[in-house]
Amino acid sequence: MTETDIITGCIKKNHVCQRLLFEKYAGKMLSLCQRYLKDQQEAKDITQEGFIRVFDFIHQFKHEGSFEGWLRRIFVNVATRHASKRQISFTDIDIIETDTTMIDASVVSKLSEDEIHRFISRLPEGYRFVFNLNVIEGYSHEEIGTLLGIQASTSRTQLTKARRMLQSLILKSFNTVIV
Amino acid sequence: MNTNEFDQIIQTKALQREADVPADIWQGIAAKKKKRRIPFFWFILLLLLVTGGAAVWKMIDHGATPVSMANQKVNADKPALVNEVKMLNQSATSIAPAANAEGLNTASHASHLAIKVKNEKSYLKTVDQGVDNAEENNS
Image (tube, rainbow over all chains, first blue to last red; front, side, top):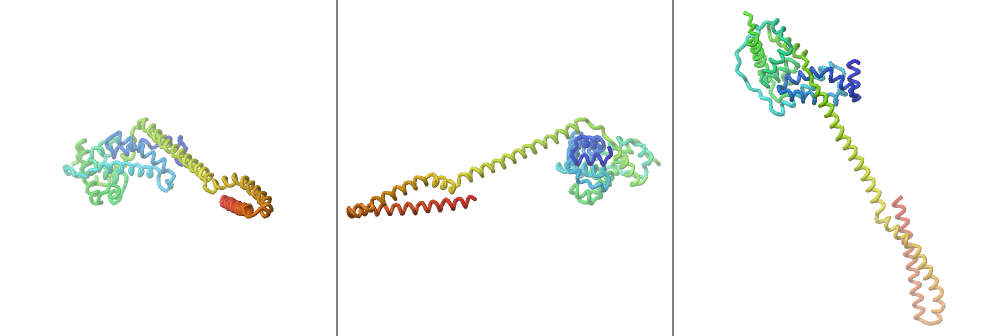
């Protein structure tokens, strides 16, 4: 069954197609939710809510871009809306300045997907949201501002600090400083 | 390594990651979908009840309008009134010649009966008119 067949089936509320769609994307979408929400139960709840929303609005998918991209946007919206209800804190944390040129690209490339995920999870909430939205999902600072109810400039500042902190965590963890 | 390079590697790795999905996530979705179907069922049932109730109420209400009640009463009274008028007519006809012969009291009684007959006839006419109007309104 092709992805188009599955989508068509989901539009017709076919339970088998819904299950197939879930099995195909649940891992990636749960991973996305876990990147935004530290609490595992919260991440699971958002994954459930996201899929229910996808099944409700799948008829609105226009087949213009990738389906995975469309799915991601829905899950990102659900996760950010959920987190915004309890106010995301955009605090600044003092970190040791790290020069990105000091990190070897080959070393970062060797990091596993789970290791990268763990490093991102260690970022404070505000940094994590902005980093995920901009670097991973490709949202502009203006879009992030609208989504999180903050200024675009705040988003830029948070991103710079988030990137520095992430690099610092990677350096600390692996001590891979190239002189 | 520059910032773009760093971001690119992180993005690729993060997008590739797939978490282990606990079985209870799908069960939760199925349960939530089922839960949402139940209110929908109740909504339809309520809608049917309200529509049915309104239809029954309208029928009952229409059956008990003042016009229809008046029609029923008029139709029930009509034969009796017709009989009464007939009897009065007969009495007036039989009494009138005798009254002329016997004197004023009987004559005035006869004329009183004649007036009553006239009134009853006019009432019957009004009743007939009322029935016609009511039937027109109902149709």
